[in-house]
Length: 289
Image 1 (tube, rainbow, N blue to C red):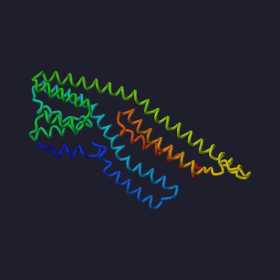
Image 2 (image 1 turned 30 degrees about the horizontal axis):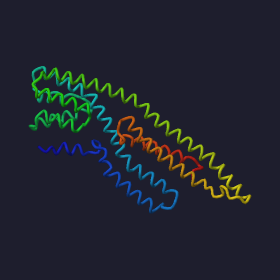
Image 3 (image 1 turned 90 degrees about the vertical axis):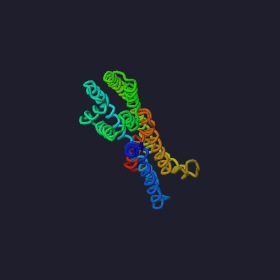
Image 4 (image 1 turned 90 degrees about the horizontal axis):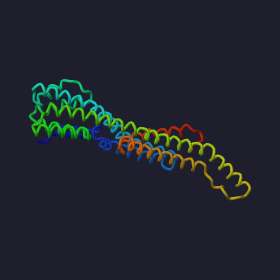
């Protein structure tokens, strides 16, 4: 059967954050073309390019973060859902009827998914297929593993309540280990931010003290008839430092996402934050050209 409803749900940007780029990238291109037409050939073109990049990456970045938080909440409630299903199954109900019973409960972000499964079963779709559709929507190793275990146990005619209780405990243990791993990786995300702050600080110091000294030295040498440093342009180097800091912020954000959550796309939100920080820092400095 063609489950059009579930396919449409999976196409929502918050389910597949990359879909957000279908709107954000064209919007960024329109903004870029308009900005180049108005500010092309002026220093303000830097702002146009930066904000075009932010427009392109911010929606998928924060959509990905929303999905990450939603999946995290689902995984936290999933063991309780399996445990309740096991208790109802032990009372003598079939799994489809048990699903109808637990669908009346409250499982946070998982509640909506449980109601979707119950709706599919009520439409005549087998319980196993409803579970598989749920696993396809969420797409996490924890959910896939537990769902596969439940389906195989039901097919084999095993003691389903016991299997469900074991699956719930296994899911809880895996979630605890995953949280511990993410907690240990959080230090690397902090290091990425710290590295960006240090880099920005060094760039700002160079812009504040090194460039003026070099500019004055070039002017003094020019007055004596020398040629060394006569062509030194502090504004040009300020823009170069600015570009370097922006690129470093963007890349550091991607690294932070890969280190912290295991996905480069998870770093887009970090890139947006760091790029805005760099832009604000340079914008507030009166010596930036």
